[in-house]
Length: 330
Ligand code: GDP
Image 1 (tube, rainbow, N blue to C red):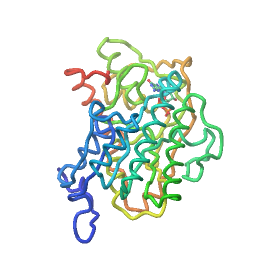
Image 2 (image 1 turned 180 degrees about the vertical axis):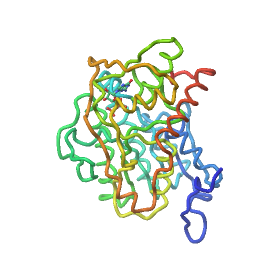
Image 3 (image 1 turned 120 degrees about the horizontal axis):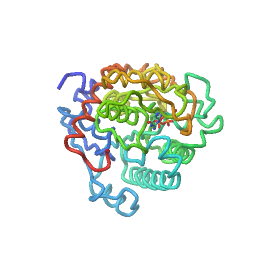
Image 4 (image 1 turned 90 degrees about the vertical axis):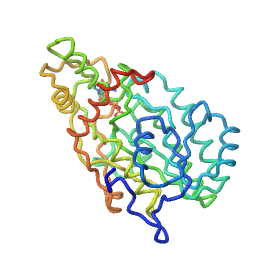
């Protein structure tokens, strides 16, 4: 493991996370498993619960588990997530699951006196027409994209809950807003995945089938900022360990690209030379979502993984998954 994985923060001369009880919700998902990897060598006492062991939608079970296990720090990642099509077709599931889970985790965290929590929100929370790059104070200043409104509102409620618990109960809960995430552990479901995984799967399938073209949803003009999960995991550790004066942080690369350019880059990584066909029956969604991440940059964090190098790790992950398919990821 490289030194850069480890937290540079100390508390009373001791590495910040050493010996601390750290609960990571959603540790089997793409981001949760990246964070677990990034804790290697930190000597933290990680508390990890599978869905079978603890159903985060079950209020009583969550309160009892937290009371018994007493985490000191929580990374609240566990949530129902999905791409634009999943959001447009399953809005009730997104709203119900996320409101239930985050309410249970936050109330339990407050009652047991958790020292600090980092809650993962989403760039969907910003208005569709927010000024670019989007600053944290653009939250709730305009209408949301229709396709992802239910999910966005669940995450806005989570950000507001953090603020409310801080204000009313003196908690130390902070929220982060990442751009489109990708990396090892992604979900490559043909309809429900996010853009990177969806295009990666289709270019690979087109290559294997010897086709001359591959399909990209929408018209290719929307722009997206993509961030490798390992970079986000490092940012989350930084925000947990650093004394911070804000309750909301954008965490992005500062660079976005048009979907058509992203598709071209993915096709290069996959080694497919065919041309792009646009399926304009699928939504474009928000046209641009570039985040202004200067607030976290001021704390010293910066992304380390280039788009091409990151996409190569995704493609290796996808090829490995094809050899040993895991349910729910394909
Ligand atoms: P969003 O950033 O919240 O909109 O979520 P996504 O990760 O699903 O990205 C959606 C954007 O990528 C839209 O502009 C889609 O039209 C475009 N897109 C192109 N191909 C795909 C694909 O295969 N899957 C997904 N999810 N989006 C795609």
